[in-house]
Image (cartoon, rainbow, N blue to C red):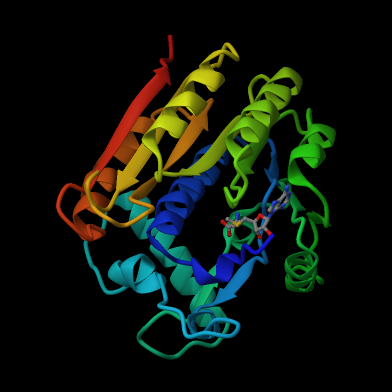
Length: 289
Ligand SMILES: C[S@@+](CC[C@H](N)C(=O)[O-])C[C@H]1O[C@@H](n2cnc3c(N)ncnc32)[C@H](O)[C@@H]1O
């Protein structure tokens, strides 16, 4: 496995994923009862955008300037994005960045932990040894966070149903292997058998439309509860860029999340566009009844 998320941290795909994640956590916290957050592919928890730009051996073009970089100095953001950017800025400043550009970017575990209440719990899986080590160091003195250096698909089964009876699951794989979509569909099926009301968020790349549509077909075979997809492309379908955008499947979304995300999608499609034809689209796979 070669994947290192720090090359991609803060890119346009992270913006979409993390902004929605923050919003869902807020929505889950409308209820007093705590919930379990499971991150099946947690990463290292924090990313130094400066060292990521240098890469391990070669100079690599950083991706964050076309992602969080484009939101950094904006004012009058839609609510969903204002909240997310405020979280990223708070993290960056807490780690001591005094510059006017972002330096320290929080991964999904850090974003959720920053919002977690005493009654909320995090269970994080990271398979790569080095990344898991960094994640452990990141949360060394933090309560309410469990970390396992293990396969997140297998680990998820053991987490559900949680004693809290409420769960939020993020499945955010690197999509390096050909059967990743199939693994995700299986994991979602298993998770829903154990916790039918869990909110599950799956991130996916928009590199091949046909593969994504086949994935949706597999998901709908599972007799899904209410589910929508939220996609953002930054270029049109004929553009040479390989990953033209990304999407999220949101299973059992919190009430009214679709309405809250709509203005954020329209705004992001304009601000993050890298060519003609980028757009945002929210589509129900299975409608709420
Ligand atoms: C896209 S990154 C995760 C980013 C993170 N969720 C975030 O938003 O900050 C994917 C991570 O999954 C890890 N990984 C790959 N296969 C895995 C597996 N089967 N189980 C757990 N982690 C895995 C990779 O090492 C990588 O760190």
